[in-house]
Length: 225
Length: 223
Image (cartoon, rainbow over all chains, first blue to last red; front, top):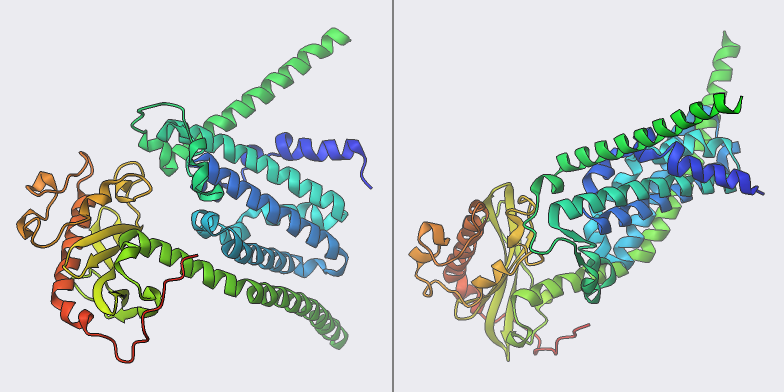
């Protein structure tokens, strides 16, 4: 079983302290490619989270049977098989979403954060902890992706949730928010350089926040002494 | 020495066997999933293709099973294709009523623009859709029906109306409008649609030949 404190620390790790997008800087390939709008970003983030949870659970389950010399090939095999299963299932049952994310789904296999969590955490911890860690890490990545997607979509097209009809059907088109009406678009934000710039700003904000917190902590120590 | 080699071999055999077991389990998992999803995927791909065709050729124009008429034609300069492409022949009450062609505009701003073009028996365009392209987002991508209605202006056009010399974007003295700042993309599409009409004119007689042993027209099953 898992204590509440462990649970909290895993989530704090995944969302803030070791955030894959802002701190570990792993898995940037999908981060940059798919974060041009919120719907794509959220969909790929959740798909990655699902793959991470499944692969970490599976890796943790078999960790005692895998000699350490061949652990990497075995983990890659598990991840690739799971991704392919999810790829086929999405192709069969959510075609419209598959059309949008199709080429990025197989790339989840090569997203180093999936293998990184399998090797660094799941291979040394019990299944429940590993799944929770993977979900927390995946959630951290998803949050960064969505924030990035929102920044780029508003700056680039002046909308939010464009393309939501691809996921929920044509009726959902009414939920597209035109944040900036009559906006002519800002190409840079839509293209990959926009992703680099926006990610840079997010990392800067994260670091600034961290530095401020440390400074406050340092200032508080002498006062307490 | 021998003992070392033996241990090494034993280790290799053990790890190899473990890897093999994982490979077998993984393969079994994939085979099972593939087996389960294959018919669903095939069906949804068909449905998607039918939906796309319905956008370029009105369903009232034909009563045959259009997807079943698929023909593969060799690469052709007029179609802009470098690989064999597909076309579908529409009939109503047994008579030739139109065709849906796959064509390529090879001179887009960033490479090939893939098109699906519907043409009726009189040589009039019934609709055009871009199926794949790499044009600049926010600039040249308005040729995509999901982004703007630009592509709708081809509907009803033929080689007679407008005249061939007016099959150009407005900037070049033609009748098709294009947005300022991105003329290469629409220019390529206009040229490709006109070439497809030339292709149609050249092959119309062959399309109109009734197929041998064609079953009586079946009511379309629209899902």
